[in-house]
Image 1 (cartoon, rainbow, N blue to C red):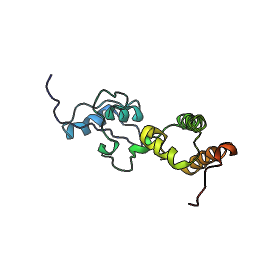
Image 2: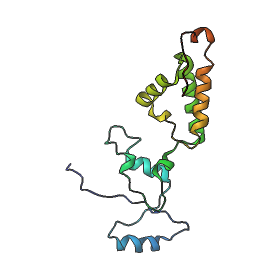
Image 3: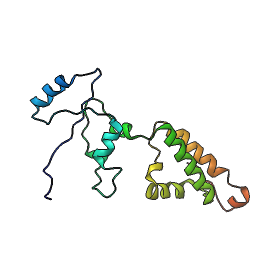
Image 4: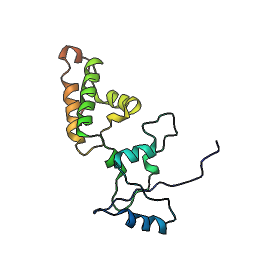
Length: 150
């Protein structure tokens, strides 16, 4: 099997419903293949990046060219349920590993668990939660820790 020819994938999102005929007219002008309906924007972006196929080349989010306000990072942002599960995982890791300071935890998270990243809009509340969990480690364990001002 030979190498794939360079190609593009295109997702066009409208504020109103478009007929197949309207879309065919557009793709015809672009000399593109016949249009296909998109069942899930999130699924399509994940498919393009091969996020669920680690054996394939992993494209970067930054490789996707977005226009007219489409935000790939927003589309791929974890759901509230996923965010809650990640915060549970983070708290468990902090407890299990007696994390006493934020910096070593953040260094670990950046290197080993980038999905724990604090990139969503409510990152301040997440950071405060993590600081609270770190701060509630028993005092007897924390005697050698010196807190410094930010």
